[in-house]
Amino acid sequence: MKRMREAEGIVLNTEFKADVNAYLAKTPDAVKTRDLAALIKFNEESQEEMALFGQETFIESQQTKGLDDKIYKDA
Image (cartoon, rainbow, N blue to C red; front, side):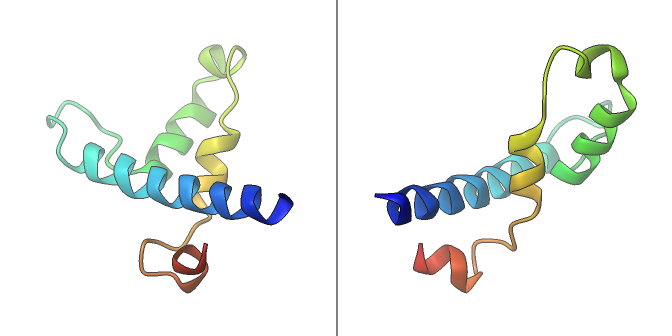
């Protein structure tokens, strides 16, 4: 069961990063955050909002290596 949860987490985080990056890349020019890394940085600089929300999922997803990564494919 633990192995299944770990694999599920890898898949969810990897696909989350890929999808957020694809979405942000196509947003209007007024949106300054163009990828997940920039979104994390923006959140870190926005103390007012971050007092209410965490960004653990963003950080875990940012650490993944992409849809071609062997770890993701094996999961």
